Image (cartoon, rainbow, N blue to C red):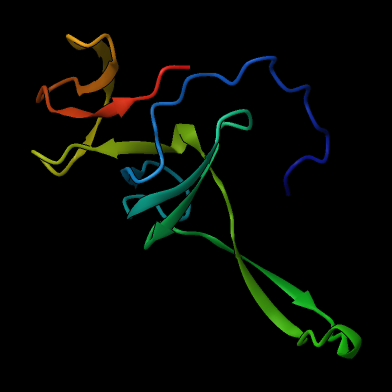
Length: 126
């Protein structure tokens, strides 16, 4: 059961090695080794919503509310995964990769796969 204590948020969101639309593989946990696509990144919480076979769903039992025309029953909701459990998939090898950041000629920061040297999409400047 996760802790209910909320830690203070950092002043600035830390840099993330994962972006929306990235193909990822899960490194640990219930869905270890499964692949998916990042839907949304919560940089301050260091978490990301993942779709595909790597997705983890929480089930919530909801009572019906006829006044608001809401059905009752069990509802599935995506659970965000911590960024440390996710690794970017290198398209050239199809395996998990670490990335480094480099500047291109235009001054944009790009992510580069450490082993293969594959260049990923441009990271927007903050």
